[in-house]
Length: 86
Image 1 (cartoon, helix red, strand yellow):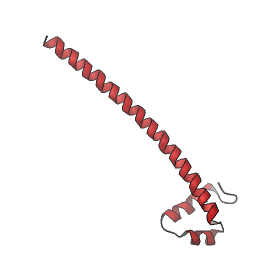
Image 2 (image 1 turned 90 degrees about the vertical axis):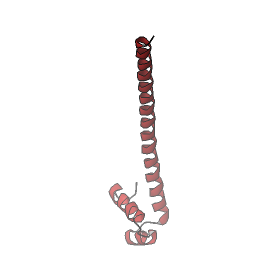
Image 3 (image 1 turned 60 degrees about the vertical axis):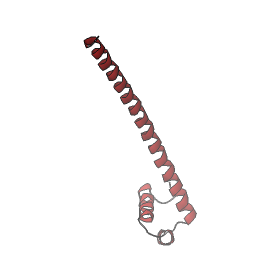
Image 4 (image 1 turned 180 degrees about the vertical axis):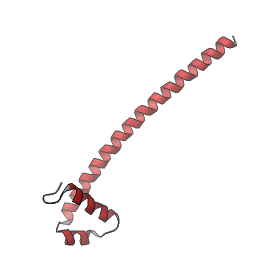
């Protein structure tokens, strides 16, 4: 992500910022510009969005499967009830 910072360091900077450390303080202490930090934030946000999209798709598939199972079970119950009470 950065030229001379590891991904772990960048994650640490972002975590510190999210926890309330001012951007100015981080930039001054570690020697990166606000523009670079914004780029890092954008990269992290994009990756987080991709993860959330993947999780959302998985949940959608699970919902479809469970809805199908419920429909099949209800149809089976209906058939059994019809057979018992013609």
